[in-house]
Length: 154
Image (tube, rainbow, N blue to C red; front, side, top):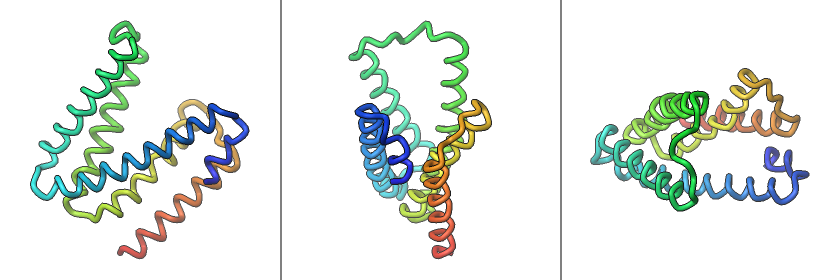
């Protein structure tokens, strides 16, 4: 809530972005719950292959429907996309998918809360984007909540 309030002065675009974030979090919760069920019988490799292929098909269909160019993005954008594919997807989401077989979905969902905090840290380190006071406050609350939850689970 603190992070959403931090950009409340941005008008309609900030509200739209916050609604996208809320929708994304609902989708992530559904994805995690479905993943917990699927991972009872599917290996991580099979599960992630199905998920990533479905995601790629959806993005391709959306790009084609929206008239987006599929080529000509330049080397910087291609390297950024490759970096996100390797670090965020293969080394991030695949680890969460693996963990769904061994850990409760609530724990995996709680660990997912680290993503925006780590993204803010990377933004600061790589692009010198300083988060506002409310964003730092919200991130601190997220870290404290994750710590408390993890301590209770242990």
